[in-house]
Structures are given as C-alpha cells and as structure tokens.
Image 1 (cartoon, rainbow, N blue to C red):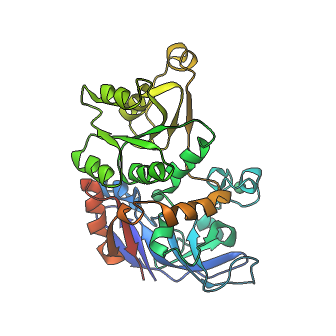
Image 2: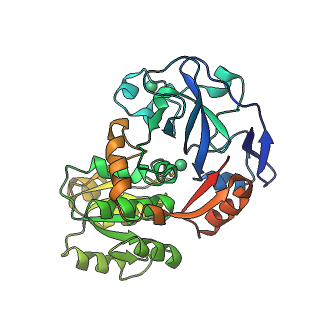
Length: 338
Ligand SMILES: [Zn+2]
Ligand SMILES: [Zn+2]
C-alpha cells in the first residue's frame, strides 16, 4: 500500500509498505478520506517523518476476531488517538488525554498502518466510531480536527450563559469554530489578521470579523456586546498575541478556552486578570466520545460544513495541499488515498 512519508529534505513522498494485518481487537480500515492538519508545518521545516496524518474516515476491511460493535464494511471515523482503552480517562470517553497510548511501532514492528495519510490504517476497534448512513465520509472526517476541537470547547461552555463567542484565529480550526458557533445560535466574532481568512469567516456566517491589530478592534467588540465583552472566547491561533487579545475581549466572569497549540508563555496577573474579573481559562483538545451523536447532529444541520472544505485532491497531489495550507489559502484539505 502507499503511505506518505517526509524524507527530511523538504520533499514529501509516497512509499510502499505492506498492508497492515488485523490482530486481536485491532482492525484494518481502508482510508477513504484523510483531512490534512498541521503536517505541512513539518514539511515546511524540512522535517523527517516515517508516517504522518491523524485524521480519517474509512471502511473496515479486515477483522481478526468478531468484534462486538464493528463489522466488515462499516464506515467509521478513526479517532485521532492511540489511547489504551482501559484506564479511568479512557473509560470516561476522554481518549485524547489517556496517558498510556499504544506504542504502535513497538507493538506492530512497523509504521504501516500508523499514519492516516496512507491507503490503510490499523486501529483498535474502540477507537473507531460508526458513521450514520445519511452522513458522507467527507463530512464525517471533519469531526476530527476540522470541527472537533472547537466543538469540544463549546461543549465545555454549554451550561454557561453565552450570547457572543469570539473565535481568535481563522485557520482551519478557527473556521470550524465559526460553524460550531453559528449552529449554537451564538453571535460569532472572528479576530484574524489575514483579510482573506476574515473573508472565509464571513462566508461561513460570522457576524463580525476584525483585525486584532486594528486600533478600533476592541471598540467594535464592545459595541456589538453592549460594552460587556464576549462571554466565551475560543483561541485557535496558537499565538500568545491571540491568547492575550482573546482574554482582553472577555466579559466579567467570561471563559477563555484555548484550542490552538502553543508552547510559548502567556503572562497572567492573578489579581487583575483572573480574580477581579472572575474569568476562567481552560484548554481543550478534542471532545468526549459520548458526544459523537451530537457532533453528527451538527454535521447534519449546521450551515457551512461543506463550505469548510477548500480542496478535494488525490493523495498523489499532497504537495498541492501542503502549499495551499502554507500559503493560508486553504481551509480543510481532504485527501483521497484510494
Ligand atoms: Zn487510557
Ligand atoms: Zn488534526
């Protein structure tokens, strides 16, 4: 089978690997759709990788022993995790946060079936979620990083009184946040430096888009929120500037939920920033397995799900997808490995 690798010289290649084999609870899935995520950053940096990709929807094609819930021919989302399936965190459905992920290479002796940018992947059956008949594989695949992180953030805030939500950063994840916010009947404000990306957010139904560098940006937000600020800000830019801006737009008692990955430090003054304002700051990675039915309900009914997809390309054109993501002209890029 073909599997995408990064040789480490700034190129991207399809290499030949043996098709993985099912064993025990591990089943083989033919990857029908693999969305691109942040892999292009490693490619841009000339990084080396023996496998890439963590998002996919596909069809179960090989099972070693009969499974309770998964059968050959099932269409499934491949959860972006290699969680153990047995610990407390896993049993609560928070697979992403499991501390005992499988060591895929050590357990199988190969990278074949590890990355989703390949014709086949190998996964334990509990890390697959069946796709309802009326939902396409393309749309189901968006439940990974296209819609998932911001969906999880909004689920965390669902019991809070949220009228207006700020999405900080309108990359593919932030644009998914716009879809999530509109579906929940929130007023959605998007802060994003790139005019092109602000345009994408407007096309998805954002009520207001602002350039965080514009001196009037905060004033515009105050006007839209009766001088109160937003009750919820979901940070998707992965920058300290975006985190700070999002925090400053919050109303008293508001919530900042950070979704954009970043290892840079944001400085916070406990008294002025947290105690006097009563705000909360949380992180969110993905969403709970028990929320999948609601996710599919959103995919069925939300505006902008299909519009979130900017490219549909064969896996042989992966470089086209990488270039579009690096240029900031793409939202979700879907690859078809088979
Ligand atoms: Zn676990
Ligand atoms: Zn992803």
